[in-house]
Image (tube, rainbow, N blue to C red; front, side, top):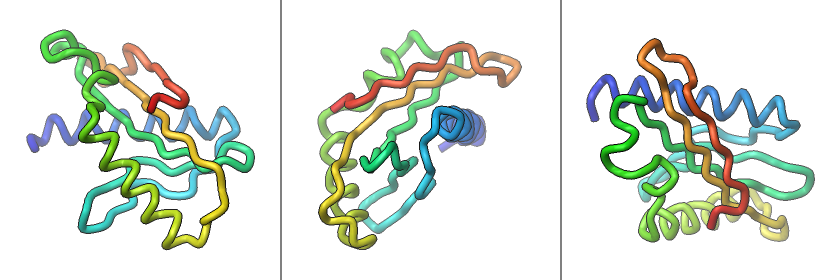
Length: 123
């Protein structure tokens, strides 16, 4: 992954975390990793555990390959669900309700947030 894509991703994830916290979510984990993959953000909204897939794009490239939210395809959804189950087992949260959200962030040329969309219960 290029340094620019990594930078765009870090900016998007930081903005998603900031806005979730402002919205009253408690962040339980960021970039939670296993050998099978990574969960971008795990948050708590009331009693519900929310697994958030953050997709960031630069404004210059945002139209070329579809929207950031559209990039969370069925394969990625399966991976996030599998990782969520593993997270729930490893943290002994077997009974908690879950939700899967997508946050799409478009980053402007000057690293400002050009667009931010939060899709609750996206899949």
